[in-house]
Amino acid sequence: MKPSDVARALAPEDQSTEDEAIGARPLPARYLGMGVLIAWLCCTHVVSIFPGSVDEPVLRNTFDTGMRFGDIATFLVLALIASRIGPLGKRLALCTLAVALTTIGTAAIGLWLIPGQASETIVSAISFATAIGGAVLFCLWAETYCQMSGMQTIVYGALSCITAAVVSFVIGTMEEPYAIIATSLLPAVSFGCVVLSLKSVPREKSRPTGIRFPLPWKLLLLMALAGFMSGLAGSLLPSAEGTGAIHRVMATGLAGIVILAMVFVRRERCDVRFLAKIGLPVGIVALAFIPFAGPVWAYAVSFLIKLAYVWFTFFVLLMLAHIAYRFEVPSLRLFAIARATSEAAMFIGVSLRREIQRTELASSDLFLYAIAIGGIVLLLICTLIWMSERSVNADWGASGISLEDSVHVPGPREQLITRCEQLAREYGLTAREAEILGLIAQGKSRMEIEQELFLSQNTVKTHARHLYAKLGVHSKEDVCELFEG
Image 1 (tube, helix red, strand yellow):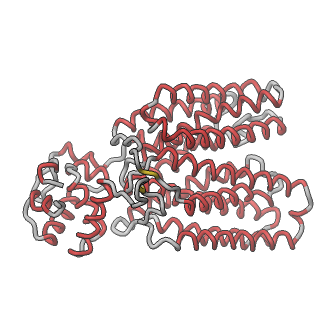
Image 2 (cartoon, rainbow, N blue to C red):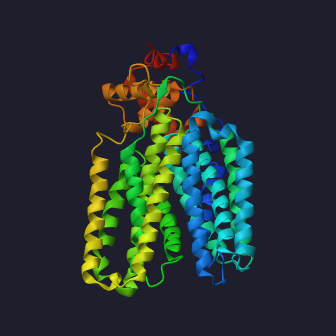
């Protein structure tokens, strides 16, 4: 990296204008759009919202199954063609059609097909098609978040969870048919937000030739185990249909609030490890209480398992985004396979739950103890998988490898971050100072640094002053020289 290649960087003595103070504020489109997509997923699975007072359990289950199969199939197709089509952000016309199909399909099923007692074949087919736009939206948001720094990903992800809970509860207070109409419009709102967000982040590069990107199977296994336990969570409930979705809404909102609070309380020491550390004990407590839950406490157990699922899912998605950002791994195939794995495992869990509820197994003490012990073992397996990596900054085996000699090929961003880590160890920099050093090396202005790290301008100036003192430099050119060679 040459000094001439570094754009205007931040120097400790720089002065800021009043207008730059807005830099630390979150951009609403990034969390509103992802939040309403999560809300759409939740609302379409809450029976009291979708289809409301219409009591058609057979068609409702048909819709749920069709949506899950549509999700899984779409993600698998996107994963298979990812290397050919490249980033979805470059194909917004096709994405527009998919989202329009989802909007129309959601309205048609909720307003006419289920209330009109259409045939199961028609409901299943339309449900399958309706899921396509939702899967496309998820991959578009993954592409957006993979171009943001770690702190931005955590903060915007937490705000999205809170937004999803708020939107879901607001729609839940609406009367028919307005609740279904509002739910139907959520994909279109999310798409508008993701188009705006894609314009405010760097464009994802096309897949490089001559390099293959292995899959992080350990992380995918974590997603699968969490999805399976989430789908199975309602086995003890007397009426599980729709209840699990309500618990997921509540767990999502609570998780977002706690994550956001922890980010700002632990601002200097924040990393994604605390997500897994919290999710593990929550899940173990919930599973340990299964044999003693009874008909009332079963709801609490179900909620806690959903909460643990949200924690683990958030952790894995953050890790995937970190891998895509640091090692410049194409996001489409990575996230499509992750979601297909998670949805398939959740579907298996839901199917098993329904089968259990048709039998007398749920009333057997031996069965309940077996479920509790089996679930705790699965959680411990998740922990062992997570701890098997040397650190959460590892690539989990997903970074690019040359087809010619099977050697890892580091990209520009990985080289820069690795150099920042070397300098941090050499000069005793804090994690925050190392982050600011990397942003300076990328040519970020003070306003951009404030926005990426959600810090005030005075805090950024203080960190930069300490950074310059530790490095023993006096100018931006001196900082740039540390990255030469």
